[in-house]
Structure formats: C-alpha cells, structure tokens
Image 1 (spheres, rainbow, N blue to C red):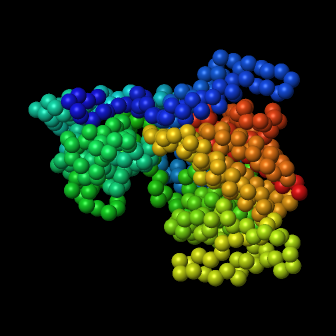
Image 2 (image 1 turned 60 degrees about the horizontal axis):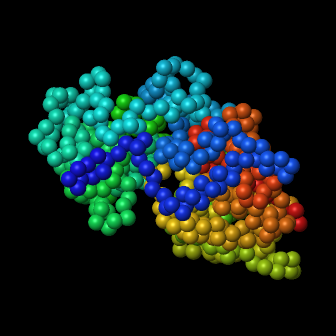
Image 3 (image 1 turned 90 degrees about the vertical axis):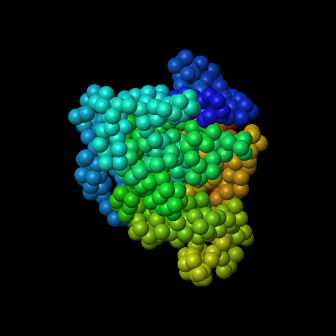
Length: 551
C-alpha cells in the first residue's frame, strides 16, 4: 500500500479485477438464470451451496489464481506417454514438492501436480485436490511479510546470506511506498506476471521497472504491473523503481540472471529465475517448462484437450481447423491420427501461421497444411458443379508463396469431413487473469457477432454427415450456449451431439452441463461441456459443443 502518491501494491488475494458495471451485471444475470433448472415440466431450485458455486464473485476470485497443476499433452507422432512420463519424472526429480502423474481420463495426457504439504510422499494426488490451491503468500504484498523461518532472508550476488539489517533501512519513503526493505525489486508486465503464476521464469522483455544496482545472482522481489487507463500512470520500460506510480501485485522471489543494465539492453533471454520454494512464491510451485521436450509434448490446458478427442479424427479424414494459431489443437489432431489424415490449419495472420508452421514441423505433423486465409470468407459456392475440386486437388495445384505457404484462399462447399472451430473470443476464462481488457458491454457483444461469421462458413464447408466442434475459452454465455442456440436455430441442418467424457472425468465432475437462459432444452444443455474457473476440477473457463450435419 502506498502513501504520498506512490504505487499501489496489493496481494493476489486482495487484488480486485476491475470490470465494467454493465459487463458485470450482464454476466451476473447469466449465472443467476442458472440457479434454477427448468425442464419444461417443473423448476428445481438449486441448493444454497450450488448457488454460491455459480456466483460470479466466486468465479472471478478463482480466475485470479492459476490452476494448481500443469497439463502436458504427449505428441504421439514422436513419442509415447510412457516415454514422456519417464523423462519428465527424471527432469523434475530435483523438485521434491512435485510429482508427474498420468491423467486418468485420456491416454495422451500427463499432469504435473504439487504434492500436498502434509504428505509429500503420496503418489495418488489428483489435480482437483483442493489441497493444491493453498498458497502461503497469496495474502502478501511483499517478501518482508513472510521471511523464511530458516533465516532465508536477503542474499548477495554470490548467494550468501547477508545480515538481518534492512538493505534500505535509511530509506523511509521506500517503506512508506510499500516496497521491500530487504530485497531489490522489479516490476514485470501483467502478461509476464500471469505466466509466472503458471510456473514460468521471467524473460528480459517482460521486465518494465527495476531497482538500481541489481546484480546477476541477486535475490529480488517480483511484482506484476496491472495496466492503468490513465496515460500518466502507464509504465515505460526501463523505469527506475522509485519512479513507478502504478498498481501492482506481489508474485514472489527470484534470482536475477543478469544485471539491471543487461536486463534493459538485452533483446532476449531469461532475466529472472523464479524460486520454486512455496515460501518464496505466490501460487503453486509449478516448474518452468519452456523448451522442455519440445518435440515430444506441449503444454495445453486440460479442457482444451477435450476438443480434439470430441472431434474424434480418423485416418483419411479431411479436416479444417478454421482459427488454428498458435496450432496446439491442429497438432493434437495430427497426433491422434499419427499423420493419417489431411488437416488444413488456417489463420488470418500470416505471422501467426508462420509460427504455427514451425510448431507443426517440430512436432513432425506432416499431414498439416498451414494456410494464411480469412476463415470468415473462405467458401466457394455453387457446390456440385462439374469441375468442382476437392481439398486435395486445390492443395496440389496451389502455388507456393515466398514464405513457403500455399497461396490458397477458398474451398468449395461440403469439402471437409470434420471442422474444428475455436474462434477469437473474449477470453474471459483464461487463468490466471490479472486484468480484463473489455471496457464496454458493446465491445463484449461484438465477439459473438464476429463468431457467427465463422459459423456461417463452417456450416457450408462441412460435408453432410460430418462433425464440427465449437469451443471458446470464455465464461460468457453469449459466446457459448448462445452461439449453440444460434447454430441450431439458423442452421436446421445441424444437430447437437453429446460429448462423451472419460469415466474418471465424470466422477470428478470435470466438465459440467451448460447454462440455462439461452433457449436450449435440458437434453441440449446436457450435450455441451462447460468448465468453470471455480469448479472442483480447478481448470480454466472453457466451453465445447459438438455438432453433426444432418443434410
């Protein structure tokens, strides 16, 4: 906390995610309508506990925190779950508070979970265990609140313990502003802060402000900047800490990998390695996995994995991923069929497609054809005319541009056996989320309008008898159940199909039914899968629906 016009420093628990009043009321109304279940014959009031679980406040409180586990999806083209499991266990064996376990639901998933503090030798922990959500520093505004009981206070650049006297004992204004008196400090941007809460270290490009005289090897306190709308409070990279006047949240302690001067002069590289000691960090002690087994696995949020399994790709399928970047879901489809299908992965941004192309090559996903095209306008009409070309012919005849991408912009109607549609969304389900960018209800509602354009093209491009998944990473019902209702109403040829969940997921209540209030029947609500940030599964907010084209 600050005085005298200094920064506003808060703990993760006390951080309030600012949300436009209209948006908050709009989302609250959606969840209020879910407090009753109407099947057309009777209305059943939910229990008081279930009502609390559905409250928007509980959702946003959970959204600030990261899930307490990391999910790794195995690339079956280059490896097996047994091989990746063994390698991860060896790589992480030096971190006693973690264990690597097979997911009980899908055979290509591995979870990295913190061991319960009171039972570090247990081998049966699951990611939905509430014990993993306990963090020792969630109430802390800085390291001075919780110094290590074993004398783990300030250290010098050589890692040697220094005296218990405060480093800045003479700097009264620093204490009044709320900065640590025992450690030099840095402020990173909020994207970096969210990644840190998931286990990442800090790259130099993510650091905005820092104390002077930071040296390589020194233990430093880390804070994340929460963006401000006021221009004068925006942070310029390279700012000295005593000039910072923004709003930030404490993340924990880390070790500087380079000096302050190098932090702001380097173009790339790690600037700070975060401590894995639960006493030194906010959030679970999850490991940084950047660059770990990059050909054999990739990080993917648990609900996101359901999309590929729900679409159920088969050998010889012709599949379209309409909004593919960064490429995780398309590479999952290729992994499931071991390259025995044709997958077109497209995105409007050529830069993003080029990055996805590199991912596909690294994963050995040779069946994927990356394309830079506008998926809201990628369908050629007049299907059935003599001379219409199938996907294979169009790809074979497509010219290769200077970036190495086929210059293909459109396909004929009814060309694809399966379509994966994961359109741009409001992302009001990502965890952790320290800031929400949407400023008005109108801005929020534009997402659903844009998503309908992708739906129109997808329905045309899908073959009769083909399947389509629709998914988002938001809790906003307009983009989820509301979009399902729109698809069924505007396209009678489409029918909703149930998504089969693994028994282990059903037993743990991973993936709930949909929200009421959007015109879907009880059976239709039971078909879709919704994941809440405050659910027992401790996942991100996510939504998946599966459709079949009847005629």
